[in-house]
Structure formats: structure tokens, C-alpha cells
Length: 152
Figure 1 (tube, helix red, strand yellow):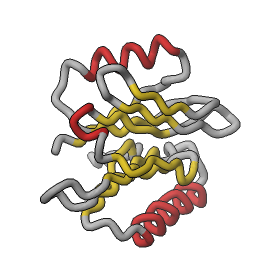
Figure 2 (figure 1 turned 180 degrees about the vertical axis):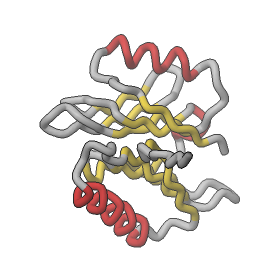
Figure 3 (figure 1 turned 180 degrees about the horizontal axis):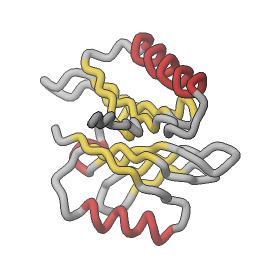
Figure 4 (figure 1 turned 45 degrees about the horizontal axis):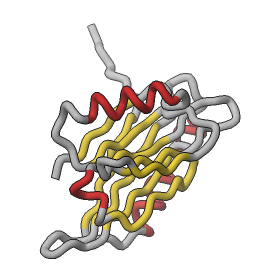
């Protein structure tokens, strides 16, 4: 199974979604986790080709938002997509033959400009959702805004 992640920077305009769909055709993927979608309204779209796109919403400042793009071959196995919090979404896939149930968490962590308390709350939420989920397999993907420490 090919699980990818993409920081979209925005999927608010229709043109950005069309570009995402065109670019996705160029790679081999089953699920693409999408971060920083910046949408004001949720979207659930099923395309003629069979792909399914789920997009959650951003916060009141227009920041964040997560979603998933599921390839045609996997779309039939979708159980649900739920935006648990603005920066955390959960895609649940049903068991399919020998493939056990799978939960994919898509996360967009606060940047370094956020207060430490907000960053801590994000990771506590992510851990709570992970622990509460009872799928056989669980995967966490996304943009964790990591900072590398370079010492000289």
C-alpha cells in the first residue's frame, strides 16, 4: 500500500483541487494525506475515475485543515473520514479480504510560532485519538513542522 502526504498550502480554490487531481495521476498512491488545506467549508467529492476526496476545514484564522485523497482501487474500502480537530483527521478503511482494517491519521502540527501549550495540546490530542482507535493497523502521517537543531 502506498501512503503519501502532501502539504497543499491551500485547496480552497477549485483550480487548486483540479491541479491536485492532475498531479496525483502522475504518481502511484493509494492514499494521500493532505495538510494545510485552508478550506472554509468541508468537501466530499467522488470523481468519475473513482477517486474520493475528503477535505476538512481550517480554523477561524484560515490556518490549517486536513483531508485525504483515496485512489480508485482503495475507495471501495473506505469506512469513514472524520476531521477530529482542525489539525487532525482520521480515515478508516474496512477490512478487505486478507487486508486487515486500517486507520490513517492525518495531522498538521502547529508551527514554531505557536505557544508551547498549543503544540503540547496538539500532540496530546493526537495521542488520545491514536490510543482510542482500535484498528488492527494505525498509521500517522502529515506535516509535523519539525525544526532541525544545528550546532556549530
